[in-house]
Length: 300
Ligand code: BEZ
Ligand code: FE
Image 1 (tube, rainbow, N blue to C red):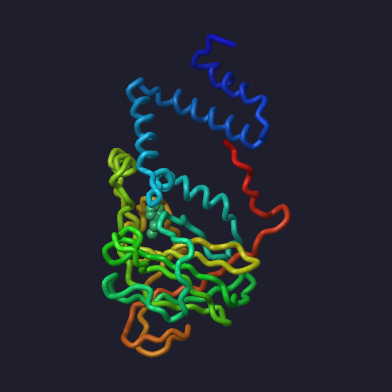
Image 2 (cartoon, rainbow, N blue to C red; image 1 turned 90 degrees about the vertical axis):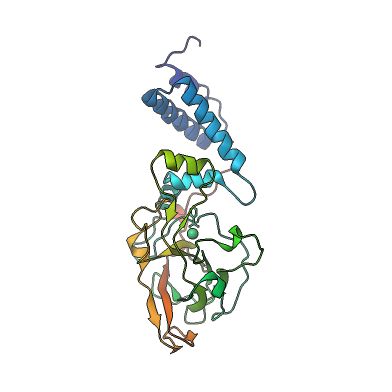
Protein backbone atom coordinates (compact mmCIF):
# COMPACT_ATOMS: atom_id res chain seq x y z
CA UNK A 1 0.00 0.00 0.00
CA UNK A 2 1.34 3.37 -1.03
CA UNK A 3 0.35 6.89 -2.03
CA UNK A 4 -1.60 7.74 1.11
CA UNK A 5 -3.62 10.93 1.18
CA UNK A 6 -5.52 12.91 3.81
CA UNK A 7 -8.46 10.52 3.61
CA UNK A 8 -6.96 7.03 3.45
CA UNK A 9 -3.94 7.45 5.76
CA UNK A 10 -6.02 6.64 8.86
CA UNK A 11 -7.26 3.25 7.67
CA UNK A 12 -3.79 2.44 6.39
CA UNK A 13 -2.21 3.02 9.81
CA UNK A 14 -4.95 1.09 11.61
CA UNK A 15 -4.59 -1.86 9.23
CA UNK A 16 -0.95 -2.24 10.37
CA UNK A 17 -2.28 -3.31 13.80
CA UNK A 18 -3.59 -6.61 12.38
CA UNK A 19 -0.89 -8.71 14.05
CA UNK A 20 -0.98 -7.06 17.46
CA UNK A 21 -0.63 -9.81 20.10
CA UNK A 22 -2.70 -7.81 22.59
CA UNK A 23 -6.41 -7.13 21.89
CA UNK A 24 -6.36 -4.26 24.40
CA UNK A 25 -3.26 -2.63 22.89
CA UNK A 26 -4.84 -3.06 19.45
CA UNK A 27 -8.12 -1.47 20.54
CA UNK A 28 -6.39 1.45 22.29
CA UNK A 29 -4.00 2.01 19.39
CA UNK A 30 -6.77 2.03 16.77
CA UNK A 31 -8.82 4.51 18.80
CA UNK A 32 -5.79 6.72 19.41
CA UNK A 33 -4.93 6.79 15.71
CA UNK A 34 -8.52 7.52 14.68
CA UNK A 35 -9.01 10.37 17.17
CA UNK A 36 -5.55 11.83 16.60
CA UNK A 37 -5.97 11.89 12.83
CA UNK A 38 -9.46 13.40 13.14
CA UNK A 39 -8.01 16.06 15.47
CA UNK A 40 -5.26 16.90 12.98
CA UNK A 41 -7.75 17.02 10.10
CA UNK A 42 -9.93 19.37 12.18
CA UNK A 43 -7.23 21.86 13.24
CA UNK A 44 -5.08 21.64 10.08
CA UNK A 45 -1.82 22.60 11.82
CA UNK A 46 0.84 24.49 9.92
CA UNK A 47 4.27 22.80 9.83
CA UNK A 48 5.43 25.32 12.46
CA UNK A 49 2.50 24.47 14.76
CA UNK A 50 3.34 20.77 14.43
CA UNK A 51 6.94 21.57 15.46
CA UNK A 52 5.65 23.59 18.43
CA UNK A 53 3.50 20.63 19.49
CA UNK A 54 6.52 18.32 19.39
CA UNK A 55 8.52 20.92 21.34
CA UNK A 56 5.73 21.25 23.94
CA UNK A 57 5.68 17.49 24.53
CA UNK A 58 9.49 17.40 24.64
CA UNK A 59 9.59 20.17 27.26
CA UNK A 60 6.85 18.43 29.23
CA UNK A 61 8.98 15.29 29.41
CA UNK A 62 12.12 17.25 30.23
CA UNK A 63 10.32 18.96 33.14
CA UNK A 64 9.66 15.61 34.80
CA UNK A 65 11.87 14.49 37.69
CA UNK A 66 11.51 12.37 40.80
CA UNK A 67 9.60 15.26 42.42
CA UNK A 68 7.77 16.76 39.42
CA UNK A 69 5.40 14.96 37.04
CA UNK A 70 4.50 17.43 34.33
CA UNK A 71 2.52 14.87 32.30
CA UNK A 72 0.17 14.20 35.23
CA UNK A 73 -0.17 17.96 35.64
CA UNK A 74 -1.08 18.16 31.95
CA UNK A 75 -3.66 15.41 32.41
CA UNK A 76 -5.03 17.27 35.47
CA UNK A 77 -5.26 20.63 33.70
CA UNK A 78 -7.00 19.10 30.68
CA UNK A 79 -9.60 17.38 32.88
CA UNK A 80 -8.37 13.91 31.91
CA UNK A 81 -7.49 12.92 35.49
CA UNK A 82 -11.01 13.80 36.64
CA UNK A 83 -12.48 11.84 33.73
CA UNK A 84 -10.38 8.74 34.53
CA UNK A 85 -11.33 9.06 38.21
CA UNK A 86 -15.04 9.22 37.32
CA UNK A 87 -14.83 6.19 35.02
CA UNK A 88 -13.06 4.13 37.69
CA UNK A 89 -15.22 5.12 40.65
CA UNK A 90 -18.82 4.46 39.76
CA UNK A 91 -19.68 4.00 43.42
CA UNK A 92 -23.04 3.70 45.18
CA UNK A 93 -24.56 7.16 45.59
CA UNK A 94 -24.33 6.84 49.39
CA UNK A 95 -20.53 6.43 49.32
CA UNK A 96 -18.34 9.53 49.71
CA UNK A 97 -17.39 10.90 46.29
CA UNK A 98 -13.83 10.62 45.02
CA UNK A 99 -11.67 13.24 43.39
CA UNK A 100 -8.17 13.49 41.92
CA UNK A 101 -5.12 12.38 43.92
CA UNK A 102 -2.75 15.17 42.91
CA UNK A 103 1.05 14.93 43.02
CA UNK A 104 1.69 15.66 46.70
CA UNK A 105 0.73 12.34 48.29
CA UNK A 106 3.64 10.68 50.09
CA UNK A 107 3.58 6.93 50.58
CA UNK A 108 4.36 5.72 54.07
CA UNK A 109 3.63 9.01 55.84
CA UNK A 110 4.28 8.56 59.58
CA UNK A 111 1.42 6.95 61.44
CA UNK A 112 0.40 9.07 64.42
CA UNK A 113 -2.13 8.53 67.18
CA UNK A 114 -5.42 10.40 66.96
CA UNK A 115 -5.06 13.76 68.64
CA UNK A 116 -1.60 14.45 67.19
CA UNK A 117 -0.59 17.86 65.88
CA UNK A 118 0.39 17.35 62.26
CA UNK A 119 1.14 21.01 61.50
CA UNK A 120 2.58 23.72 63.71
CA UNK A 121 2.02 27.48 64.00
CA UNK A 122 4.47 28.04 61.12
CA UNK A 123 1.99 26.29 58.81
CA UNK A 124 -0.93 28.49 59.83
CA UNK A 125 -3.80 28.75 62.33
CA UNK A 126 -4.71 25.41 63.91
CA UNK A 127 -7.46 23.40 62.24
CA UNK A 128 -9.12 20.47 63.98
CA UNK A 129 -9.68 17.76 61.38
CA UNK A 130 -12.04 15.16 62.77
CA UNK A 131 -14.35 12.57 61.39
CA UNK A 132 -15.40 8.99 61.15
CA UNK A 133 -15.28 6.16 58.65
CA UNK A 134 -18.14 3.77 58.02
CA UNK A 135 -19.25 1.31 55.41
CA UNK A 136 -22.20 1.95 53.06
CA UNK A 137 -24.21 -0.43 55.25
CA UNK A 138 -23.71 1.94 58.21
CA UNK A 139 -21.20 -0.19 60.09
CA UNK A 140 -18.42 1.91 61.72
CA UNK A 141 -15.01 0.87 60.41
CA UNK A 142 -12.47 0.60 63.25
CA UNK A 143 -8.77 0.47 62.41
CA UNK A 144 -9.37 2.08 59.01
CA UNK A 145 -6.34 3.95 57.66
CA UNK A 146 -6.81 7.68 57.05
CA UNK A 147 -4.02 9.48 55.19
CA UNK A 148 -4.34 13.26 55.43
CA UNK A 149 -2.28 15.89 53.60
CA UNK A 150 -2.78 19.60 53.06
CA UNK A 151 -1.01 22.79 51.99
CA UNK A 152 -0.06 25.45 54.54
CA UNK A 153 -1.48 28.97 54.87
CA UNK A 154 0.87 30.14 52.11
CA UNK A 155 -0.37 27.40 49.77
CA UNK A 156 2.68 25.12 49.87
CA UNK A 157 2.94 21.43 50.70
CA UNK A 158 5.80 20.21 52.91
CA UNK A 159 7.37 18.39 49.94
CA UNK A 160 7.58 21.67 48.00
CA UNK A 161 9.70 23.28 50.69
CA UNK A 162 13.44 22.95 50.97
CA UNK A 163 13.60 21.23 54.35
CA UNK A 164 12.77 17.56 54.57
CA UNK A 165 10.43 17.75 57.56
CA UNK A 166 7.00 16.36 56.84
CA UNK A 167 4.22 18.65 58.00
CA UNK A 168 0.56 18.97 57.20
CA UNK A 169 0.46 15.25 56.59
CA UNK A 170 0.07 12.07 58.57
CA UNK A 171 -1.66 8.74 58.71
CA UNK A 172 -4.10 7.97 61.54
CA UNK A 173 -6.18 4.93 62.33
CA UNK A 174 -9.79 5.07 63.35
CA UNK A 175 -10.74 3.88 66.84
CA UNK A 176 -13.25 1.10 67.54
CA UNK A 177 -16.11 3.53 66.78
CA UNK A 178 -14.56 4.51 63.46
CA UNK A 179 -13.50 7.97 64.74
CA UNK A 180 -10.26 9.87 64.13
CA UNK A 181 -8.95 13.40 64.72
CA UNK A 182 -5.77 15.41 64.28
CA UNK A 183 -4.77 19.05 64.47
CA UNK A 184 -3.53 20.47 61.17
CA UNK A 185 -3.50 24.03 59.85
CA UNK A 186 -6.04 25.99 57.81
CA UNK A 187 -4.82 25.57 54.20
CA UNK A 188 -4.89 28.28 51.55
CA UNK A 189 -5.86 28.11 47.89
CA UNK A 190 -2.74 27.66 45.78
CA UNK A 191 -1.52 27.55 42.19
CA UNK A 192 -0.44 24.22 40.74
CA UNK A 193 3.23 24.30 39.71
CA UNK A 194 3.05 26.70 36.76
CA UNK A 195 6.68 27.44 35.92
CA UNK A 196 6.75 24.81 33.16
CA UNK A 197 4.99 23.98 29.89
CA UNK A 198 1.63 23.39 31.59
CA UNK A 199 1.83 26.91 33.05
CA UNK A 200 2.53 28.27 29.53
CA UNK A 201 -0.44 26.30 28.21
CA UNK A 202 -2.74 27.75 30.89
CA UNK A 203 -1.61 31.28 29.97
CA UNK A 204 -2.28 30.61 26.29
CA UNK A 205 -5.73 29.29 27.23
CA UNK A 206 -6.45 32.39 29.35
CA UNK A 207 -6.80 30.32 32.53
CA UNK A 208 -5.61 30.84 36.10
CA UNK A 209 -3.58 28.08 37.80
CA UNK A 210 -5.39 28.00 41.17
CA UNK A 211 -6.99 25.24 43.20
CA UNK A 212 -9.45 26.16 45.96
CA UNK A 213 -8.34 25.51 49.57
CA UNK A 214 -8.72 21.83 50.44
CA UNK A 215 -7.51 18.95 52.58
CA UNK A 216 -6.70 15.60 50.95
CA UNK A 217 -7.80 12.24 52.36
CA UNK A 218 -7.06 8.67 51.39
CA UNK A 219 -9.19 6.27 53.43
CA UNK A 220 -8.84 2.51 53.29
CA UNK A 221 -10.32 -0.43 55.15
CA UNK A 222 -10.31 -4.17 54.41
CA UNK A 223 -13.18 -5.29 52.18
CA UNK A 224 -13.83 -1.75 50.94
CA UNK A 225 -12.88 0.40 47.97
CA UNK A 226 -10.11 2.81 48.91
CA UNK A 227 -11.40 6.37 48.88
CA UNK A 228 -9.17 9.13 47.48
CA UNK A 229 -10.81 12.49 47.96
CA UNK A 230 -10.56 16.06 49.28
CA UNK A 231 -12.71 18.30 51.44
CA UNK A 232 -12.92 21.85 50.07
CA UNK A 233 -13.31 24.89 52.34
CA UNK A 234 -16.64 26.53 51.54
CA UNK A 235 -15.30 30.08 51.86
CA UNK A 236 -12.40 29.51 49.46
CA UNK A 237 -11.89 31.30 46.16
CA UNK A 238 -11.84 29.30 42.90
CA UNK A 239 -14.46 26.68 43.86
CA UNK A 240 -16.08 27.18 40.46
CA UNK A 241 -12.87 27.35 38.47
CA UNK A 242 -10.57 24.74 40.03
CA UNK A 243 -7.75 24.39 37.50
CA UNK A 244 -7.91 20.58 37.76
CA UNK A 245 -11.74 20.25 37.79
CA UNK A 246 -11.78 18.38 41.13
CA UNK A 247 -14.57 20.18 43.00
CA UNK A 248 -17.85 18.39 43.78
CA UNK A 249 -20.67 19.95 45.79
CA UNK A 250 -20.74 16.98 48.17
CA UNK A 251 -17.09 17.60 49.11
CA UNK A 252 -17.49 21.25 50.17
CA UNK A 253 -17.50 21.83 53.94
CA UNK A 254 -18.22 24.92 56.01
CA UNK A 255 -15.69 25.07 58.86
CA UNK A 256 -17.28 24.79 62.29
CA UNK A 257 -15.87 25.95 65.60
CA UNK A 258 -14.88 23.55 68.35
CA UNK A 259 -15.30 25.09 71.80
CA UNK A 260 -12.59 24.35 74.39
CA UNK A 261 -13.13 20.85 75.75
CA UNK A 262 -13.92 17.53 74.15
CA UNK A 263 -15.98 17.27 70.97
CA UNK A 264 -18.53 14.54 70.25
CA UNK A 265 -15.85 12.89 68.09
CA UNK A 266 -13.53 12.57 71.09
CA UNK A 267 -11.19 15.41 70.11
CA UNK A 268 -9.90 17.72 72.82
CA UNK A 269 -8.94 21.34 72.15
CA UNK A 270 -7.80 23.95 74.65
CA UNK A 271 -8.98 27.03 72.78
CA UNK A 272 -11.80 27.75 70.38
CA UNK A 273 -10.60 26.10 67.12
CA UNK A 274 -11.91 25.94 63.56
CA UNK A 275 -12.99 22.41 62.71
CA UNK A 276 -13.26 20.47 59.46
CA UNK A 277 -15.52 17.50 60.10
CA UNK A 278 -16.62 14.65 57.83
CA UNK A 279 -18.15 11.21 58.18
CA UNK A 280 -16.62 9.25 55.31
CA UNK A 281 -18.58 6.39 53.78
CA UNK A 282 -16.69 3.66 51.92
CA UNK A 283 -18.20 1.49 49.18
CA UNK A 284 -17.80 -2.26 49.53
CA UNK A 285 -14.97 -3.78 47.50
CA UNK A 286 -16.37 -4.86 44.16
CA UNK A 287 -16.09 -8.50 43.23
CA UNK A 288 -16.85 -10.78 40.31
CA UNK A 289 -17.98 -9.15 37.08
CA UNK A 290 -18.45 -5.80 38.85
CA UNK A 291 -14.81 -5.67 39.97
CA UNK A 292 -12.68 -2.99 38.45
CA UNK A 293 -10.83 -4.12 35.32
CA UNK A 294 -7.55 -5.70 36.36
CA UNK A 295 -4.43 -3.82 35.44
CA UNK A 296 -3.54 -5.18 32.03
CA UNK A 297 -0.04 -6.19 31.16
CA UNK A 298 2.17 -3.35 30.01
CA UNK A 299 0.58 -2.05 26.81
CA UNK A 300 3.63 -0.69 25.03
C1 BEZ B 1 -3.34 18.85 44.57
O1 BEZ B 1 -4.42 19.10 44.99
O2 BEZ B 1 -2.48 18.57 45.39
C2 BEZ B 1 -3.06 18.91 43.09
C3 BEZ B 1 -3.88 18.24 42.22
C4 BEZ B 1 -3.60 18.29 40.87
C5 BEZ B 1 -2.53 19.02 40.40
C6 BEZ B 1 -1.72 19.70 41.29
C7 BEZ B 1 -2.00 19.66 42.65
FE1 FE C 1 -3.83 19.67 46.99
